[in-house]
Length: 170
Image (cartoon, rainbow, N blue to C red; front, top):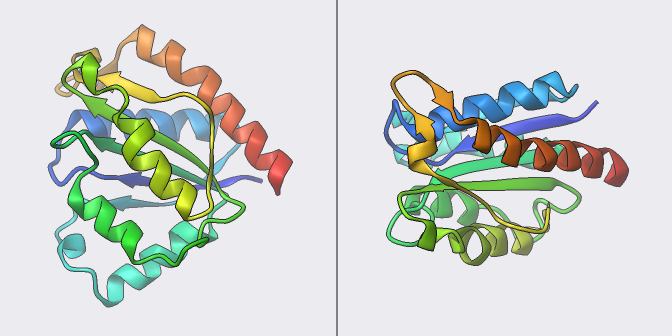
């Protein structure tokens, strides 16, 4: 059984990032993975990393699969998400598989996944699939909680491969 945790790196809710994270969690569950929890940065309790964050860090490190969904903020990941990762020791995610997904307003931000989130996850020891999962924000309807068929088609093989890699590396 693959246990996954979802990190939603957006401080605002409702958001397109939340819609996408919910969709990914639903699809992973349909593939037999079990959600171990959610770390949602729109939760005011995460505004300051103190004692509650220790349990969240342990939750992430104990999962098999780490899903990181965040907006591109000033060409990078949000600072609150980076700060969360900074509290982890180098290698803390060794043996974990990660699915980094970023949502941005313009296609020229697509490489942000490759040069911001993936290197941090790699330094923590997580394995990520090749290729960037960049989603254009216009492909997500926040009000209707719907993502486009193109995004679904883009995510499906990545989610299937991530579950398979997780099973293979456990």
